[in-house]
Image (cartoon, rainbow, N blue to C red; front, side, top):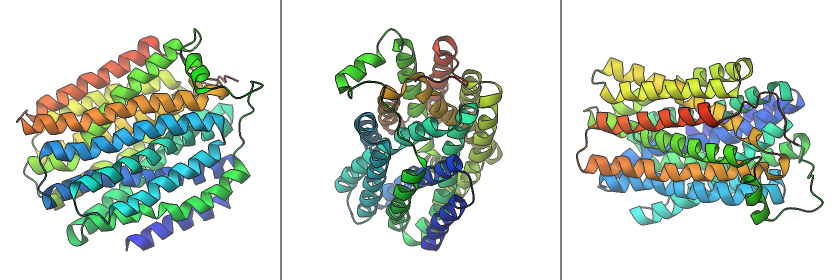
Length: 415
């Protein structure tokens, strides 16, 4: 069943590619790579719940599974994002997708905790490199008038991946085990062959303005030059807080529902319903980002996320849990789309991959802290409402950083 579903996704990408204009083809082909990545992150929240029961893991050990993947993503974002400025962006994107796909499939073969952690780190490395490089490629190739909207639409494929992940997890994990769900995402390796051809046809490598390629030290110095220092510090802070909150909340959603007294099957079903709100969140953000601009859109969706988080944490009835969970999905994923559109526009082409990759890498440190912190707090019996107050405050701080220190970049280009 899941193989048919994945084959349909791949086939759909190829068909859409043949019926649209050049930059739309690039958006679609890159977007489906994001979809596979989202499937992995989405399924991980369900896999953690399943392996915790199968291997008798503590809350802290479960949290470490999410955190080790984020550590890999941090390293991958920095290393591969930096290499994308020195070498071909397209080739780095394909390499990252293959690393993610192959090791994801291999992780289904392990039957104990420590080897699974090792594979999750390597999977995270590929995933962390793929995301900032993909958004940079799309940002550089989209028309200026719709550049922000195009990057947000790229991010919307993440919601599609989460929906497929939730659906596969709900239908297959309780019946056939978590290994089947993990193998599903490894089929992205097949798609990588198509993506390589598509990128060569439709993506244009940026023209380097320097007579020679800058060293990593020189690029890092440029990020903290007078022109870019404020943007760099702002992005690092916002990325850290957003990723900290996202992985702290979303990787634990099924487990939190189980703690609330629902069965694993019920919690998987309820998270699937909550996930449906992600797509409207992206589409509204995609419309507002060109209508209002990057800053106000990002601030709006971050504030909405903060309010939804506090309501979810304090909800006890099933109706309020689902409504606030859907609001959390709507606003948080819309904020992600706006952040991915906003980040590459802070830098000129010669350091754009490095700047975006470094910001994403710092963010992934938050992704390490978030799941670990939740696991630790649950272990010492801290109440769920108190945990969500932490995320509420973190997201409000991110919104304040954008509001006070961010600069509007709508329809501006740094050469």
